[in-house]
Length: 216
Image (cartoon, rainbow, N blue to C red; front, side, top):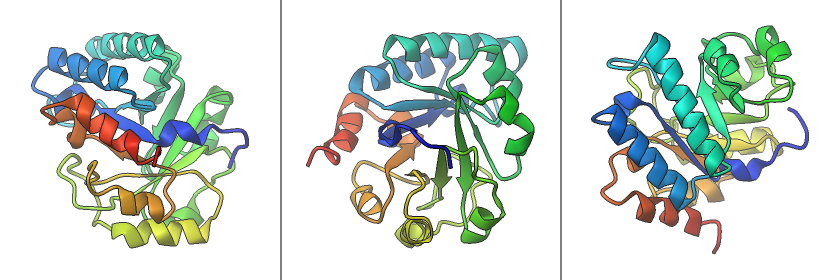
């Protein structure tokens, strides 16, 4: 685990791609609303059916980075190392089946590095020396990821926090602004979400509801 990481950026961590919204324009509009409302980090996860590729994906990433910079919010790229390098993203988030961190660290020495961890065994098998935070989940059942594993519940967060009392944890999977309180009490430093924002009727109220848990 690296030192001097600002774990406050994990508080309201929005993850999305155009495949999670009706159109690219809708995606940009939702992201702008979320940034205005005060999300603390954004991860571009452009993958799966109907996701943009090639030059269209690169153009999207550049547009998203510019938006995030406008609001001073860290911009993370999911999985796509070449894209993250091409747009000089603030960081990269990798899964257990993605490129090994030791193979990419020379390109991301001064960047944020996140790693998905869903079990204690995966934690034990992961090289966390260069990792800033771990994404732990799914906590609840989720429809946002077709490859999501079985949910571990709040107990997964509690066990991971007891296993490592210091590593920054952002919880993921089926999280909403009405069920996240116990997740934070179990030891997560923040929550990440896709559909609770992309499918919200009022993005601002959802983001503000998340933020309220850190102010009480």
